[in-house]
Image (tube, rainbow, N blue to C red; front, top):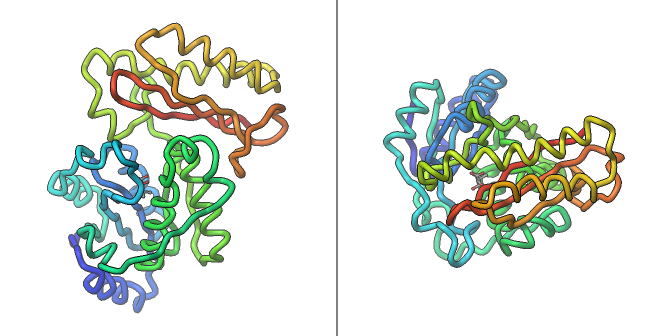
Length: 280
Ligand code: PAF
């Protein structure tokens, strides 16, 4: 496995792969890798010939007062995990390699970025779409792999790839969970042992909604009331957002007559956890 920090070295390696007709998979990450990321890597290894994992804590997607400075960074541990997993290239550029002086591109995917996390974290999805567009252009992958845990991000990137007409497949990968249901996330590292014990309650509350749906309920308001009530059973959580939206457009739904995503964000102490389930 090669660890590369410059675009010129990346291009040289990728050209060699392409000259042999090898298909390239891209797994974009911000590091602090866990089993969820490694699942994306394994999917890429299975579906393509060469796997590039980018590790870049993207300043453009963090708002003022968010956790950019304290976001966990550990290139050495991440590289060891990736080397053991069989990835071919780690692309870990510095900020001025990704955004050199004068960099002015800003990619906004309107509509799908506007609600939910987009409304609560202004500029977040523009930051994500800008870095992902840049990574797509640098790597020119045949397939790129994203987790369903960041459900709105996935919808934004699917729309981005469609609208740019890129010849690549976006592969959604189901959320990986701990045995107790907690969705894997780099931010779980912020939880104290007591908070960690309570954390799976978020997913259990979402499952309350999924169970109602499975029993035939199609009224969004009924499902939202039940999920909110379930979360409130654990007073350590402070609900930040609860949405039931069209899976593709991220528009709020009142009637569940198409594939939907039930998404929640809640604070546990100072840590903001997000999770979602798909209702089809
Ligand atoms: O999901 C993430 O880790 C990031 O948002 C991504 C897609 C790597 C872009 O920085």
